[in-house]
Image (cartoon, rainbow, N blue to C red; front, side, top):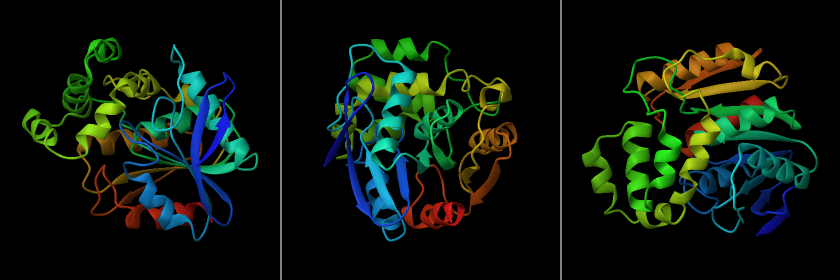
Length: 260
């Protein structure tokens, strides 16, 4: 494990493996450098990149602050990129993709950005997320917050989430459930069914690839296409046979090809 200190003094933990150009992985909700898709993806990419897989604040071995702001999370990513050599390729998944996009718009030294399915909602093709969801999540106990996030945020059936509570993954998710309001804030106003506002991405100058899975729901496909149209010069691709829980073997060659 390696650590770096963010601008506000928060310690951010990360793993570094592989050899080649620097690549930073940015996780989505309820994931960390030890759980979720990134550990396997880091291994799959380590033969072509020096991969930096970090714990976002409040997760794993990283610290936190008394008050949260998206700007502090952008500074965390900036600190990891600085530790990686001053600039890096970046891959973000789900809310991690939304964070990486905001970091690119803020001017971080990102060489190229691959964004997989930031969970924006830009039309009425799914049940709408409550506009009060940040405060709702802040008020809930961990188990209830996870259920709220999956049902109202992601749109999963309640019975499916009830079954998830019996799985081993529930306990580690519960340990970082307090960070769910962070992810909600990272998404900003892009998840309430309003058309994508392109002005928020106008400052992005890096090459951006927006990716979705071929088996992902319609609302997610619609939002990725809207995002690709809104980000200056962005490209879009779809990975056949995959959904929001994309396999490392499916996304690794997409990232490697884009960054080549």
